[in-house]
Every structure is written in structure tokens, then in C-alpha cells.
Image (cartoon, rainbow, N blue to C red; front, side):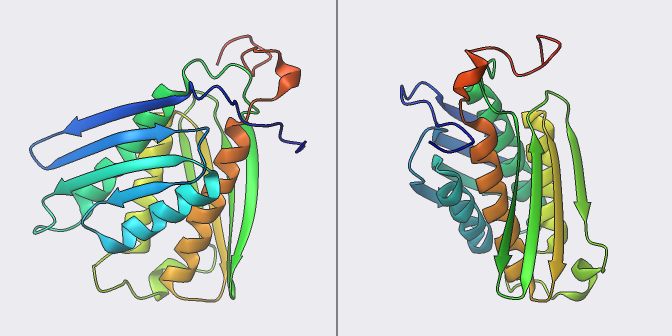
Length: 212
């Protein structure tokens, strides 16, 4: 058995979620934390679809998500609202979070680029993105006008609604695709580890205070 315990096999940690505003419409038809990494994602932003597919696959989350919005203006509203919806869905699926490992980290290389992600499902939202070498200012955004800044917005929204600490750090050399692929893979792995049930918890809330 993994040192991180194992996922719950009852299939109870799953949910649906919908968010609709004047700017965007997000439908998560399925989020299963105890899944196998299967996904069906369509946000109308191809690069974001790819990143979320990697996140779900490496986190073993089953995710069916469809999103539409005012991308004729730019990708900002849709991108941020996808992060909000994902955070809300994960929080709902986790419920009281009893028995989870709660804290975890992962490091992932992508060719010459790399990323490190740390998470703590603490019921306290915090987000930190470390780019000490100014990589984000140098890399070129892709042809769908997706940028490092958009990725930071999505991750911050996700962390805020899930009420978790999320720290991400990028290093090495590469283009935007390589850096962000490493980040989203690492996020999937870290969140998979943090949401796993640790049998030593005996179904308790993972806090010395007795409450998150």
C-alpha cells in the first residue's frame, strides 16, 4: 500500500456542479475524486482543455466539464470561472474531509522545465506562485491567447473556492506549454495524494483542532 494510503472505493465522493452568469456557463456533469483519470473536457479554449485533461489523468479524477463564455472579448472570464467551478465541485465532493491525508506535494519535470506543487486542504484559502527567474514575463503565450497569467488566475480561483493552500513553483528552461504542463500534472498528483483516505485517521477530521 502507498504511504499516502488509498482512495475510498465506495464511490461516494462524487458530485455535479453548474455555474451560470451573464458572462459564462460552466457545467461539471461529473467529478469523481475516486476515479480512474477519465475526462471529457470542452471549454472552447483548447490549451486549457489539454491542461485540465492532464490534471484529471494524473490525479485519477474522473471529470466531465463543459464551459462556454464571452471568449470574443478575451479568455479571462471563462478561465477564471472554470477555476471557481472546479474549486466548488471539489469542496462539495470532499464533504467534511474526514480521513483525508490533507497535505501533499509533488514535483514534475517536463523536458528542461519543472514544477513543484504543495497543497493543504485546510479550509483556509491561500495561493502562492513562485517564478523567481521571471519566466512568465519571457515565455510567449500560445495562439489562443492563453498566458502564464491566465494559469495563475485559474489556480488562485480554484484554491480560493476549495479553501486550500496551494503553492506552485516553476524553474528550469522551456516554453509556456512545458512549464504549465508540469504545473498541472504536479497539481493532479499532489491533490490525489492529499485527498486519499489515510486509514490511520479512522474517519477523523485531519486537524489537531478537531475541525478544519
